[in-house]
Length: 313
Length: 259
Image: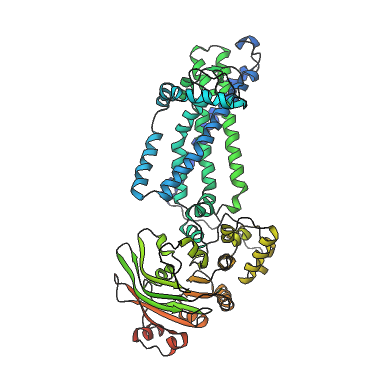
């Protein structure tokens, strides 16, 4: 190599570019700063809870972990049940709107779904108490009578219907719109080329959807589900209103004893909390933060593991 | 395996717009037939009626009949799904399923008919179809890799392998080389020449050299003007079309005077 001085070529800086790029950098750092601020606040405020005196907890609970354990369980249990109920329905609705319904009906249905997303959660809570719980109660009785040998359906059945399964149904209805809306957008973006490829091979409409639409949309379905799960994990009002909680782990779905969720527990207890009690509630909030983070990381790993087949290349 | 196509007085519509009018044509088995003509003259629209892919577009319909070995594709009670399993199609742009491996792409159509296939049968069929598409040597070591990782020409041959894996009677190709480089185009043209011994092949092309290289018979389509329906102007042996056509418009087109 000869010693040619390396002259760096500089692109001309235009003011518009500079303003725009600074704006994006600011926006990007802002979200990081907010996230860091929340995380640090939670961490610092939680510290006293981890070393709290056993007398700070109610009943026979002696440390933070046995306090938060049932809450984490209740949160994840109800959210996953909601997801199990909501995702298949959402995919069904999204497929109907994107591939089966006549165009006019599809549009109307789309608006209706978006409208459902605008209903405040407190309204869902009221609906859960006054309509859904009494409606489901007889059905729960039958379920316990017939399938009581299966642990989740074991008795004794709740007389009010205000159980964790009712909560899950309410949560499922609440997260349905967001999952449906995202799935619909993803399904509509399936390349026509791939749909025609499947049809030209002699696929029926359903086979075409299985060969082209669903595999193409899978990462989107997972992302949509994670958004829905995030909302279900953090939902406060609807759960706090519907559920009658007990401080233990219960796998039974239909009894009057149900594990509470973290968010609902904070909402219920915060008004009366004082001293280290506040720290304990904030620490449970930190746990919710951690759970949500783990769930999202898991989803990211799942999506990335199939990256080569995603169709993005 | 190879079958005769007979089209009688076919009109093709998009909702109320008549796109192609009054086409009658006979395509003999084990031949390559090229459709040429200027853009918008209805070649692609017409070829898609031969496997009932036309009606996939909302509002699209046809009048007339298409007989494959005497059976009308548009007869009452004919299932378009079954028609498409007999008449394979290769599209303008290579479209392997991005979410499937190379092997799964080849077997995609076969698995629709025959869910349970032993591993050895599946492997044999994959090899046969890929050899048939002149792709085996290039991909045999990476059958489990995604099909979207191949080059454009390889992807198009993968699509041909996918089409011939279901053992159709007829293969339709809608400008199969228009998105490919000259070397890949040559590979596909050689392949068409080989496949002729087993299949009836219909190919739409904008490239007149390609039509004269690969086809036995050539059909020239034209339109009188925008908004007018496309029509079959002349259909004859390829050598005749390119050397001594009987219609002036054909001669103008093949000699490059318009289009």
